[in-house]
Length: 424
Ligand SMILES: Cc1ncc(COP(=O)(O)O)c(C=O)c1O
Image (cartoon, rainbow, N blue to C red; front, side):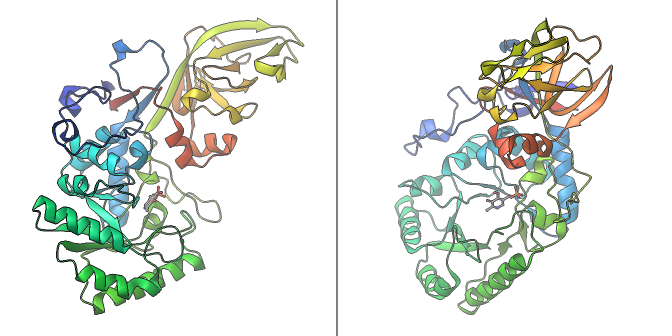
């Protein structure tokens, strides 16, 4: 038996639909962030008209967390919930993982971190993106931990702590070990450490780096990044900066036991997608997909040989065909580049797309799907168990058709698709 809950089910997640004003810090205090993060709209089943939706399986989420925790051993997990928890809905995901034992969370934006605090999350939250605008006080007010890597940030957070009468701000130093994206360059680290030590308002609780090959973490380059990180930790140590939380590992590194320090930062694996080795072998067979994106057949027609379908008639029937129109399109994140490449699941069987994917709809050749009828469920991502079989489409497979990586597939499911939370 499967129970289904909407994201605003009071018994599970508090009674605040995210699109409505909440009793948040931001609406009550002078520390409001103007910019809103694009968040998926949540609704109760009765509120939605269109049958297209994303089901988020909270049981699978917990399962993945425990699988990764087993691999991590003594290393604590701080799941990465940026971009609205890779599209799955950050508040509900964070609440579930906090209860499952997550010791902290990582996000990219200050706005994302505040959203989690407003959702009642109490464990440490690391803001990794490094961009704080002029909202340093707001970050301190919400007890968030910033990533720091340049002098201006140190000065701004020290001032924010003084202005708010706050004893200290916990910061994590980011070290650029070879990605050349964010972080202190190793050659500048000694000077940076001196700046840090001069700011009594700042407490260095963490030191981190990030691998430049998200799944190729056994490469010589990754090993070199670890060597540079170790050296950097030595530089900090010799100056008396001893961060209790050292971290480097993403999902792939964690699954391979590479770069495991005090904390690991898995994102992709939490949502059930396993990175692969260079030889193409999945790093875990245990992870379970969390997303299931489903729609319905909203029109069915028979077309004759030679008839075309969709914008530009990019497809023509070479046999008498039955064409189903499904209620999902590129505005939902069902990429236009899937045209002519993807299949979907109908009655438990694969059926190919025909014609160009349009903004709200796509068309499917269901000639070979026995017994197909109007309103049949169509699954574009995830599993389906139907009268004709049982199959599933992974984020990796969908991405291979659209030219996207699995991270992009998840983040690309647009806010127009309501998220529903399932407890198996
Ligand atoms: C700094 C940082 N750490 C960890 C992660 C998580 O990586 P993954 O999703 O591969 O586990 C990301 C994701 O982009 C990241 O930017």
